[in-house]
Amino acid sequence: MAAYLIAHVTVIDAEKLPAYATAAGATFAAFGGAPVARGKVVEVLAGSHTAQSTLIVKFPDAKSAHDWFHSPAYQALIPLRDAALAVTFVVIEEA
Image: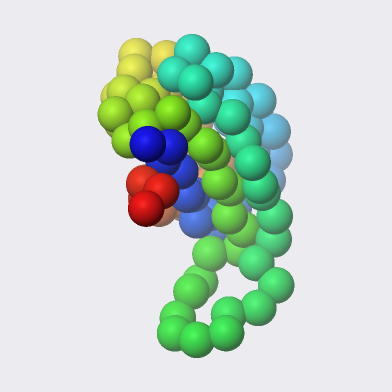
């Protein structure tokens, strides 16, 4: 069952963001992941949402998303990620 990693992002350091985005994007394929949407949040219709943008990555299943996040390749990028942005990751499965 397909799963989607949803990243809610707020940029901290715009100069570091391209290096992180390029490096992180290169790690998805090994786990069957592919970005399907990314963009700026333009409107919050209900509730509270403070992130500036959102990225959605499709994986074959939730385990693949989990394995991607915990992979040595991605874990090595966390210091750069934390310098570049604040992010909340969630994984959802197709129903």
